[in-house]
Length: 197
Image (cartoon, rainbow, N blue to C red; front, side, top):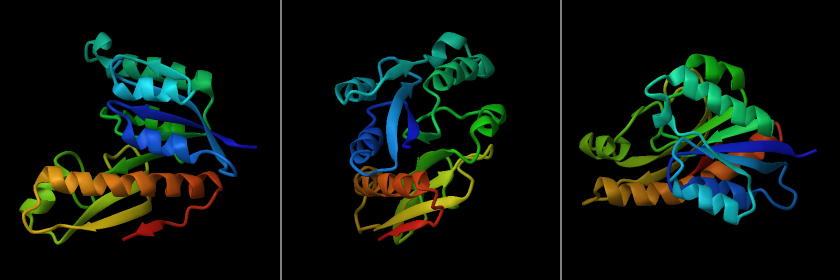
């Protein structure tokens, strides 16, 4: 029986599109919901166009009450009854209670080679540090930010003259390959990390 996957987004959803497109044929999972914290997130239309159920829970409507926002998001997720949740450019920090409810079943993709550069501005930080390589990481989500067991990494060289935008574009290409590869393995019950160069 296929695993049920919910994907959380905040914007255009390019990683979500890569995940949904990968879940065909003999893939051990299928997408059941794409949810966003912004009703205007471009990825919602893309998900609908691909035939995936969508939901929007606008975090701004909760006036900074994170617990109330998370309760509303949880209700949408529980209706969809996912086995796995994929954070794909979801730009809200989730509280410990929410994370613990799905711990061991929630994946995130982060645009750095964790444990380096948790948080934001990862590409600018890699360039400023003089790093020769950058990349992305898929990991299991824990209550600590951008922490948790690593399930896959893809590396790209930092080139002379790179800007945060040019580096981000090359890393994003790898994200679109790495995340589907990790999800396929994870949905089959295999936690062996995926490595891509």
